[in-house]
Length: 305
Image 1 (spheres, helix red, strand yellow):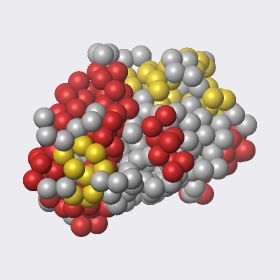
Image 2 (tube, rainbow, N blue to C red; image 1 turned 180 degrees about the vertical axis):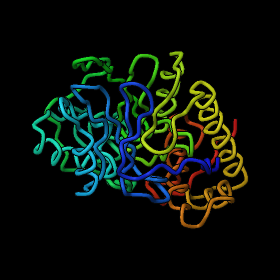
Image 3 (tube, rainbow, N blue to C red; image 1 turned 45 degrees about the vertical axis):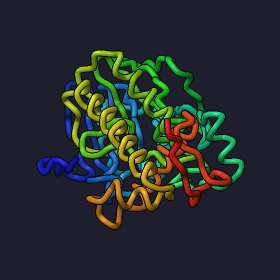
């Protein structure tokens, strides 16, 4: 899915999205972050900062300048520990005195399968992980965060990474990198887990949301349709991967070159990681298996029914 051409917000400026909600886009555009990381400010007196963003003096200053007279930062909430979302949390906390809240450290929330694969060290991964991140307060699934005039509920939505949170705010949801409108989420083992990703999609789909506010890109005004698309997209990728392996055993890279034929060369590495996530998931379902040990360069075979 191509990015919408009309999403080109000013960088470093707090824009009002609806009453009690503003967005500041960080100065870190890239192929993986689109226009930059969305930092959200909720509240009108006590301000909650969701995803302070990458290490950036300019972005830190933009957040602080958005706090007006009679306002103060009461909470700093981090959805997950990728380098474009969490590193600015501690410098911001040092400046304003607010606690940093998150599900946990970089490897928190990993499934047992991914913990084992990570310990073996054979899958690579680790793209842009903030290994130094430690929250002041760990958020449990379902926990409410409350301040003057607002509250959000922490929803553990692993998949993009094990410690990923979405945040329910009434009938709106901050979906971070789990659901975005401009692209599908990267799922790269062992930090990313496709089995968990699909389960998290199903969980979000059980609620009738009005809007999703993602970590990158424009608000998603049709949440249910977008979740349906994401689920169907992953299912179609799975079918294509199985079809390729039915022809002959192949590595994740070889499959990606066929299944993601339309993908620019610069993004083929990310596509390969997504294929590897599918292969790990399919291995767990006993539909494919690695020839030899499971690792990033392994050749996989299809199990005929």
